[in-house]
Figure 1 (tube, rainbow over the protein chains, first blue to last red):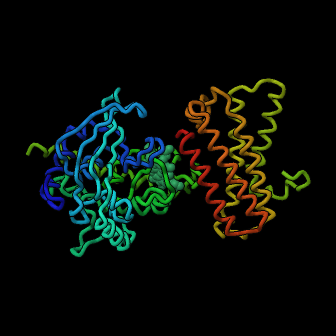
Figure 2: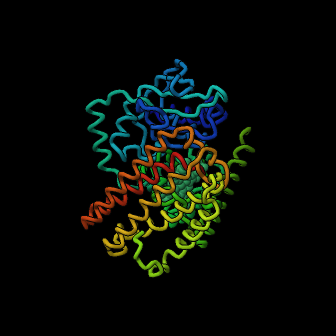
Figure 3: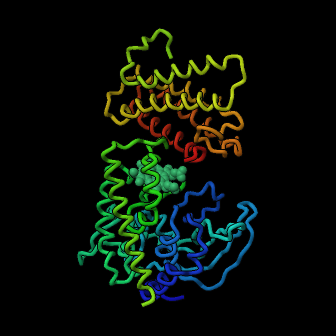
Length: 285
Length: 161
C-alpha cells in the first residue's frame, strides 16, 4: 500500500474508479454507504449515493491491499465481499468529500478502517451496500480526532487561503479535465440552487451531521453530492414529496419558492449534462 | 373530544379538519353493519391521519415558542391526536396497501415491527400528555420533539413515497 498522504496515488485511483471502472459498473443505481456497526443493515444508518459520487469521491479514499474474501451472508441474503484496506488519512482537507472530522467518532473510525465490505445482490450481481469496518483507533488517532472536531467551523463548503472553494474534489476537480469549459459554472449554478434549498429548508435534514437522524441520509451540501441526486431532487420537489416536516410528512412549499427551486435545479442539471457531454466528446483526445 | 366543548369556536383554523370529520362520519354512515372494504379502510385511516397532522401541527408552534404555551388548548390537542392515532391504527386490514394509499407492503410483512412503532408513539403521547398536565413547558417542548421523531420513525419504515 502507498503512503496515506500520497496525492498522486490518490488521483490515479479516483480517476481509475470514476471512469469506466469495474467498481463503478458493479454499483447499483443507489448505493448505501456507512460504518459497519455489527447490526442488521435495515437497522444501520447509511448514506445514499449515486454511483459516480461513491466511485469518484469515497471509494478512492482507501488503499486496497489487493485481496478479497467472499461469503454468503445468510441473515442479509446477500453476498459479502471483504477487502482489506487502509485509509488515506493524510490527504489535504479539500480531498475529502466533506470534513469527516466534524464528528470525532466518525473521523477516528474512518482512520482506523481495516477493511471495506461490499454487499452484493445475488440476482443483479450489483453492490447495494458498502461499509467501512473500523478496527480499534489508537489513542493518538482519538486525540487528533477530538482536536479536529473542535476546530470544525460548521461549513461544508469553504474558501481556502488561495481563494479556492473547498472541498475541491466536490467541484469535479481532477475528475473532469482541467480544460472542460463548463466546470466553473457547475459551482455558480450549484450555489444558486443551494440558496433556494436553504430557503426550502432542505439543509435542516440533508447534511452530514444528520440532524433529523434519517435512516437513509441523502446529501446535497456540495456540487458533487447534489449532482448525484439531481434527478431525484427534481422529481421529489415536482411531486411535492420534498421537503418533509419533522414527522416525515410532506410539507408543501409556497408556490413561488417551489418554482424558483425547480428553475435553479433545472439550470444546474443542464450544466451538469453539458459538462458530461463535453467530457465524453473529448475523452478520446 | 370533550362533548361540551363548543366545536364551532375553533372552526377558523381547523376548518379543513372539520370537513374531514364530516367526511369521516359520512363514510362510517355508509359502511355501518357491513364489513369494511379496503377502499373504505384507506379512506378512514387517511382521514384520521389528516386530522392528526392538523392537530399535531398546532402543538408545534407552541413547542417552538411562536405561540404561547396554553395548557388547556394543548391538553385538548394531545387528547385528540392520541385518540386519532389509535383510530388510524385500527384501519390497516390485509390488502390495504393497494389503492389510494402510501401504506407500504412492509406493514403486513413485518407486523410486529409496525405494532412496535405504534406502541412507541403511544408511549411518547402519554409523556406528552403528562408534561401538559404538569404545565411543564420544558418537558412539553422535548416531548413534542420526541413524538415527532416517533411519527417519523414509523413513516420512514412504513410509508412509501
